[in-house]
Amino acid sequence: MFEVRWHGRGGQGAWTASNLLAAAALRENKYVQSFPTFGPERMGAPIMAFTRVSNEPIEIHCGIYNPDAVVVLDPTLLRAVPVLEGLKPRGYLIANFRGKPEELADQLGIRGKGYKVYTVGATDIAVEILGRGITNTAMLGALVKATGLVKLDSIFEVLKERFPGKIGELNVKVVEKSFNETRGYGV
Image (cartoon, rainbow, N blue to C red):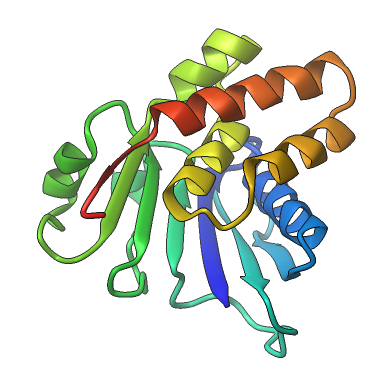
């Protein structure tokens, strides 16, 4: 089983990204869970969402405390919340960050500690293609590049179903560009 914790802010689509990943995995005949954690948060408040993907039935029904991957949609959250908390050894940190993954590893004090760090300028990509800084689909592309958890084609199919027409096509472009521009360290 592979567990993902998504960190975003209310309105950035972290839970939507979790659901899209789950739908893509389901398309590949995998077992999935997708759920958020938030209370009376407002737009812009930090939130988390979770995704489990497995080749076997998932028997547990609780929060994810030791994820295999952490995906950070908003770079301000890298310092605002403990995004690395519980991340498994050799786990993936996939962040919306303009700099190189080595720079992020240095800033967080995790260089040489065994984590796989991936970065992509997701906000820039989203603004360029969508005209707004909604980074969820860009980070979905980065997650697929880093982990290979699902096939890109599965992501494209669920995007086109969820967002028919031009919006779906634009989001496919966001995922493709993000996938191609994601860089990794410690891999």
